[in-house]
Amino acid sequence: MNQQILTVTSNRALTAQVYEMKLAGDMGVFTRPGQFINIRLDGFYLRRPISVCDIEGNELTILYKVVGHGTEAMSRLTEGAKLDVLCGLGNGYDPSKSGENPVLLGGGVGIPPLYLLAKQLIAKGAAPSVVLGFNRADEIFYEEEFKALGIPVTVTTADGSYGVKGFVTDALPERYSYFYTCGPEPMLKAVYRKAVTSGQFSFEARMGCGFGACMGCSCKTITGYKRICREGPVLEKEEILWES
Amino acid sequence: MGKLNVTLCGIPMDNPVIPASGTFGYGYEFAELYDINCLGTFSFKGTTREPRFGNPTPRIAECTAGLINAIGLQNPGVDKVIAEELPKLKKVFHKPVMANVSGFSIDEYVEVCSRLDAEEQVGWLEVNISCPNVKNGGASFGMTPEGAASVTKAVKAVTKKPCIMKLTPNVTDIVSIAKACEAEGADGVSLINTMYGMRIDLKTKKPVIANRMGGYSGPATFPVALRMVFQVYEAVKIPIVGIGGVSTAEDVVEMMLAGATAVGIGAANCIDPWASKKAVDELPAVMEKYGIDNLESIIGGAH
Image (cartoon, each protein chain N blue to C red):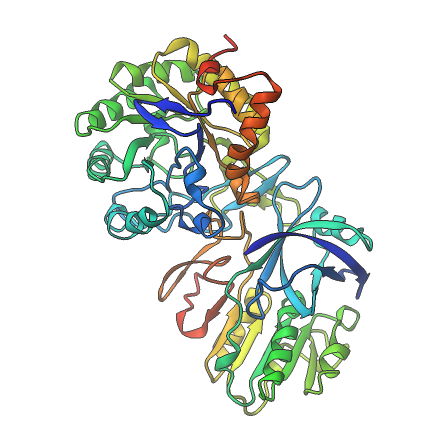
């Protein structure tokens, strides 16, 4: 982890609620896809933890959904704005376990970390496929960006207004060597029940510090208590204990 | 450069800055970021007899100028703290550490305090009789002079090291509780723990925190904490560790003027992991700015 002042290089709306922000700085501290950053915003006491979508050279991309006052303030930032950011947080996905043809399952704002993961899987010679789940057609983002990586992309919508009607679990490929997933908890539970291989889940949590000090985001696992921000946000299927 | 060192219950400290319990783990996470030996000391995560997972999540709610937490004393239990955490801590911190102890019964306080009292690296015991986030724990002792006195008397009987009783602000008269601790032989008091608070989510129309209520901390609590330190200083002779919303070197100086011998920094560590180090680093410049040569000489200076 390090603390940096990152510069906003672009900030644009992808849908009515989801934004893409690019930030420039030193990206050397990041070791894996699926890690996150923690952003300090003027006028807000706690930082905002947001997963990393992409890293290219000295530029980092995040996608975020406007859900409250903090993310609303983020959406108003313009090019050149400076942000105090803790970088390189969390364990991230382990691409080495993917096998030949892993499937990546993302739901809504759980999709972003799968983008850098897909790029790294392709770079190491794997052939990933992607299933992106949304509620409605007008909420879809990053379909073209994933397609531009040259991999199979399936989009599902809960209301059937675009692509496959249903959830990501309704569009699982026939064969896959492993899975990586991130999304709302009901989706993660459905993936857990339906997936036939081992895999990795990225969890969201309401955090205090984001780096392991406060114990605000602890969860129980088969292998003991873990902090989502520190030993997570990625947990392996075999260690997950669902609380309810 | 002015003199930063103070003496807390007979133990010399290079400076008065103490990262507060529950915001600094057992130190080693922060030691990855900077040399934590620059600190006066730190108070490690509240330790109980048994391992505890703590409360269900969400445990955190943001507020204007602060946050509410309801962690519920998550910790590995005293056996593991001694067997695993203290050896790790010892590698990165070479000064006496403050051992924070919590409990659900007098017996538990006695057992955990006596175990940690025997550990070489422990300088002070900070006895938390003020945790707002567990039922029948901590705060139920710290909310009456009689309860506070009974824990103080019991832990003093089994320990050699200084016992600092950590007090809750969620009482009518904190002064009477501090005096009750002093009367039973407490070597110091630390105040304040967090203030009861809550938030409600407008979307779900339910409390944000799973435990419904939690402890509010952060800069908004500073004036309340400062006032309580000021009042307690006038009523007791034992040293005070001033805690509550302290974020900067200037806050440290202000807290000492109110009567604190040493000063805890809590919530600030959660939003800036370097906050306690920055407070230490900035103390000399703040002292120079306000014409202070010797920090120890300003303790209680506002009275």
